[in-house]
Length: 267
Image: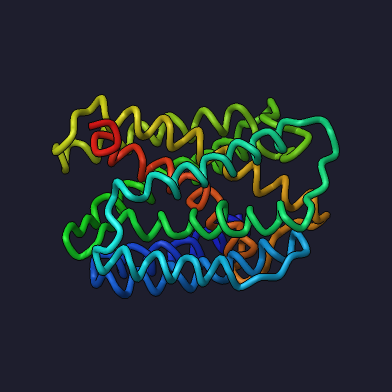
């Protein structure tokens, strides 16, 4: 119970900072995410024994150009494809029974595309000067946090069947299902307050977000097993480090950005 209490308090503080900043001021939200992302990148690079400032520089450069409306949504297709390729490699690495060692080039590319671009798309969800969309950020984090919170609580209470024992023994199918169901409920509630899209669209986005959030969590757990550590850091009581807290968001944000802008990419 004490662990759950500490986790809840620190999680609430983290949530308040993100949502409070995006609805107060777009620049403040950007600064908050850049700081959180930089800390997550430091923790990630520690896990894979790599050191580079390029991911942070890439995020700052992209954010500056995006906010100055020098980069438009359609021009982000190539960064998206770069992230997706990194994700496909990570999914292969996750499910492979082979012991794959990450070479220097792999660590560099993952730092840039998986971490750097993943964090950039968390910021890009809010839009730029021409089209500020804090509701996209709200929906994104509501779905991520609902999925992860209920997966944790339900898995801890009634979880019996391991989801991926080799990588994360405590994650269960019961927890995964519970997180998915409550994410769908959250999407249904969100649609009632913001009916600018059909309920079908929200359900599809919630389903994909829930699955990807779980994948992102498992991949981060795989990195920790690779480094033989329990947590990526200790800055957030009850959660570990910022990479522990942001793993699902970093992995899911590019796909979420693609989904909400799907019409622009296919038109």
